[in-house]
Image (cartoon, rainbow, N blue to C red; front, side, top):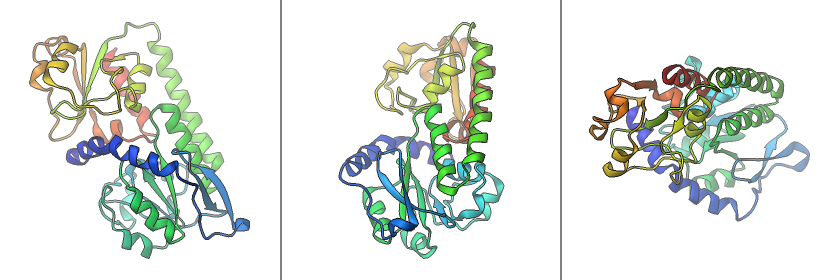
Length: 297
């Protein structure tokens, strides 16, 4: 799982740029008669046609699978990726392969009406192939907690479970507000998030940066361009964070050696958070927020 997470972060913005280029060309043209479809705008500002009633869908990202189950539409999923391991019932659904390289033939054979994708895991040619088959492709790309709320609400709208989605979002907002209330007057330590031991971290466009700030900390890398930059050892050394948070995986179980004399290591302020919770923009991200707040205060 650690390898997948690093791979996920490495290609995130390279593929986003490709998708944004595609999104600016034209809106989606499907084979659905207008009387049987409705239009919804995805996170790339693409206006796509969605069937009035969605009964068959495929998720090509673990966070989207979690969201679909959370809004009460898990029974509408007919396909998921090998990495979609939460909730437990997701494992019972047919896998169409790797998140980054799904089997397009298997996807088409499952006859989905909608395929949910993350901009980190699909390419323009893949999107065009599905849309040529009359399959709607819906893209999400949240870069903040508010963006995650929006993803949940839009998925609920697509499946006709808006009330359930609103309930989920409402509960998450209450938990976030409780964290912000507890930490609003606390000192704000400088926090470094180590995604990978080779010094991949978070930048200003990452939802994890928003998470750190809401938890009462200050991300040491919040001004860096892009979402998941890789730092040089010299840059990392100069940060001297008060706290280090490790996105816990088998290959990211301790800070890079460059931090050995940092305040964080000297004071024993190095903490681990399950990578699946920290890296997936889905409802469990608020559990990640709560854990961060508890550890840094």
